[in-house]
Length: 205
Length: 183
Image (cartoon, rainbow over all chains, first blue to last red):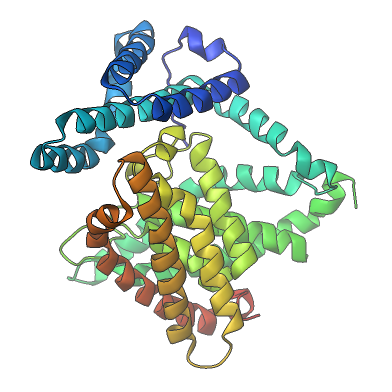
């Protein structure tokens, strides 16, 4: 499974993940706090510089990831053109693009393992209450492994449908897919248990 | 083996939500290509029940947040939580929890109808409450205005809820022990 981390290494890759996430929180709050056109314009410029520092490829990948916002940009843009509140519309659109771009920046420059470390740290309070978080960690790893497998099975079911029917695939293919998922869960549970089980693995309880 | 079974079912249903959004052929062919991702969220509730269904969806949302492209169209990462549609993603686990709670509590009647109605309350009413509030905050619109914009997608999701009900009843026939909302 390919993560959204940028393969182009930037200096920001070496910044600590926790620090980047904290900075992102502060920046996102600030973007909502200072809603003047000038503040938003400077914020979007700083963001552009951040991306540009990563080089041309990094900048173009970042720009492509913002493309998903276009329907919202159209809706909000048309709305404010009709109502005539152009300055307000510009502030909203700039804030929307900047906040998503900054969040994407953190995702693009932070490796999955570093994110996992932050997540493990965030779950510290759970461990203080003697809740075993190892089951959560193993389930994260399992999903990452299972998605490609299940995608493959989904495609096989769709192909089987196409080989037999002239009509297009529809929601009915979800049933065999869900049954396969349930059966796999049974087998994996048995396999986990046979290898010592989750409780024994964590050595507690 | 109860803990292991719970963990593997939660992980597999989290993966199932991703697959329903990522395999383009699994669409709800009504002319408009609607991905089946929110169908996956509803199924987590109707099949796994409130607690485990909510956890499966929460696991999915955590994986999206740490940077895996699991949302429909290969979206993912922290930007998802700043986008105008953030409310929907944040509301996903709650939607599954409410859907599961209703499916668990209402024991009488046809499972397809009970699960379908539960999916309408959880996967449409509750989910859109989150989605509309999210859009109104990020796009700086009133709740009424946000409802008008988002309302266009409600009919598609009601159809998905009905399909979730039918699928739950069929799954209950095929694998009764694994439909935990009724176990």
